[in-house]
Length: 210
Ligand code: ADP
Ligand code: MG
View 1: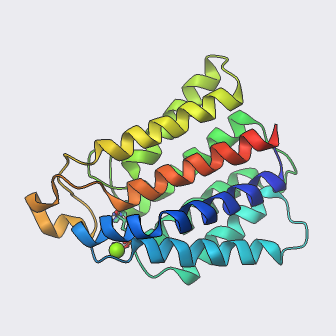
View 2 (view 1 turned 180 degrees about the horizontal axis):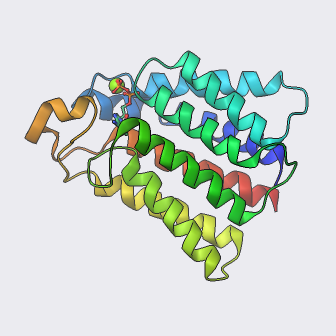
C-alpha cells in the first residue's frame, strides 16, 4: 500500500458520507444536534480537495494533511477527534513510501489512541470508539492469525459495523448525547455509524489496491 491507498480511502469516505448524509443527520437529530452528516460531508469534501492539490507526498504526510483539514473545517466534536486521529496515524508512517498490513494496524491503533486520549471515551460509552476499537483489534488479531489482508480488513469492517449496532441499547456517557441520560438509549450513535463507514471505505481502498 502507498499514497494512492490513502487518497483512495479518503475518496471512498467522501462518497460514503455523501450517500449517508441524511441518515447521519437523522441519527444525530435524535440524540445530538443534527449536524453530524453535514459535518462529515464538509470535512471529507475538503480533505479530497486538499489531497487533490498535493504534489506527491508520502502516505503518512497525506494522513496528516487530511487530519489537519478536518480540524480546520469541522466544528463539531467529530472534526477534532477524527482530525487528531488521522494526524496521529500519519505520524506512525513518517516519510516511508509504502506500508504493509501490520503497519496499517499501527496507523489505526494510533488513531484510536488519539481519539481515546482526546475524548476520554471507552468502549461502551456510545461513541465512535465502539466502532473503531473492535475494528483495530480484529485487524490486528486476524493478521496475526495469518489471514490475508483483504479478508482481515473485511472482517475489521464487519467488526466496526457490529460495534456501531452495539451502541443502540447503550446509554451515552460522552459527548452531546450524554446530556440526554436514559433518553439516549435505543438510538444508534451517529459517530459510531460514520466510523463504520470510514472502516468500510478503508476496506474498499485496500481491496482495490491489491
Ligand atoms: P457534535 O456532537 O459536536 O455536534 P458531531 O455531531 O459531528 O459533533 O459528532 C458527534 C459524535 O462524536 C458522537 O456521535 C460520538 O460518536 C462522537 N463523540 C462525541 N464526543 C466524543 C468523545 N468524548 N469521545 C469519542 N467520541 C465522541
Ligand atoms: Mg452533532
